[in-house]
Image (tube, rainbow, N blue to C red; front, side, top):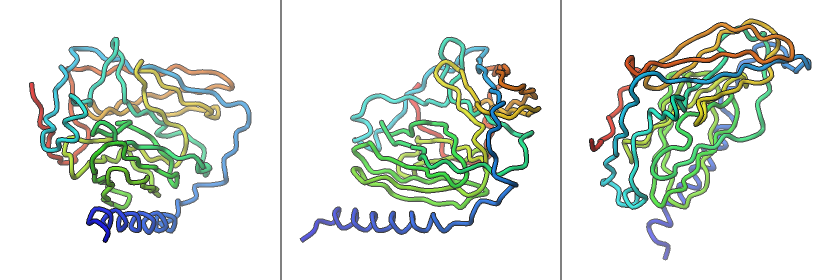
Length: 267
């Protein structure tokens, strides 16, 4: 006889296959114009996100509700990561100024892992229609629950050892919070855009947005704790334009109105 866990796993696999096929039949992305093709004279936007002020002290997570998570080692709230005065996990994207065109959907997947009982990466970007591949690298079960305002809400369990869950978003939305209904401290943010001109600042605070046609653009940078800033830049033919931003640690606030249970932390 099959064990109860085996039966549950089999049922979830069937559910995932069904959901994946449903995802392919979701509402198609609206065409915004002719298919955009590079002309060969494109430029790039490069920059660094700096941080001024006192960096919030790391706060240890209380994960005793799941012994599997607890055994993975100490974990800290990672909403603010600053290295040498540079801020990581800032979402950067072209907010306005692009030509009216339809941008090809990448065939590549974007991965969101559950590793160490946290989402990795914490902030990511994806194009409308592009495949989001959700992985569970942990020895425990998770429940993935994006809570969009524009795209369809969904929530799905992923057992330890289960294969990837594949999903797509069909509409632009900046940014979608993703929580785990099983582990209240887990949080990620997904920026969904109809174009490929976005980036996330790395450990050194740097970012690059490549391949923009010459023109004037409005750039927005967004951090989950410090909100959003904008800047207008002019991209010239085959040239880099610099767009640096600075966030002030004394002016922290949560930009999202989403009401979520706060993580339990130990001072």
